[in-house]
Length: 406
Image (cartoon, rainbow, N blue to C red; front, side, top):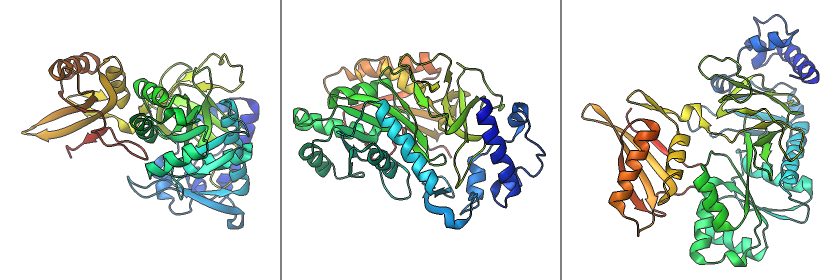
């Protein structure tokens, strides 16, 4: 941790401890923050803490300074409400504009925004960054693929912003209609979920664009706190706004650069709802060496998955990233799959649905995937090959693992 980062966190700690919000209770037994060692002894902030603070327990400034709220989806419990001051909104737009600049977007670009608007942070973040940069924002939001493609074509959109799932849906539709040459897309900025290399290549090839990862989460501004660059060596994190750690998700021990663990974020500039040592549940690692692009911001690796995405089957921990990697090594398999877990007749039954083209030898491919799964992950599964496009596509995040055992 750099000296200036520690001083900011130290000031923030004492201010929050003296207030009457969430952290005054969280830190009531913590007497001082005078060294980096004291920082490492601070308790982590968990998603459950944020839910328990519903609706506005996270608010750290007077209400007349709050100009906006955003919220997590709340699909797995009580939603998390995040209040923003005007400075928070401005800082977020500044970070997002920086993301666009890093991938080579300029004020002459036309940015086609498909993520959702409303309480979700996605759509409005992409739009605010575009406007800050001076580019033309085309705020489509999700859905209505016919209208998306018409506007993309008629307005000459050059940058597509989407989740990987919706980018794939659009790419497949563009390929099916044979209209790629009628489009002016050159770049895709993809966020909100982990995606494998095979899916990345399909989207890039079918859209004919360069693809970049954008990172963020509702609790910490939203998308735009980090982005990959043309060198594709990792994701640059804006450490003038956030401090990052990688921890062992089981022990909480801080891990050295290069070791994979859970990303933990402390905000440095946030006013409305600052967070200290917030566990994101995203799995990645710090990359020790600087990026060859020359940008002086540290790198984390592409997000591998989430600690809460993991399922345990027959004593084996399984992450979606492992299935992605296994499928990527089988040429005849598509990028799209669903992993179903059921408990029948007293035992766990695993079924892996994988898309493939109609002209493949289905029996041979199912055997190859079954063997690959056993070699890579350690258990046998029932493999079922389905046609391209038969598994559902999503305008938001795709669910790939379905645990029906409980």
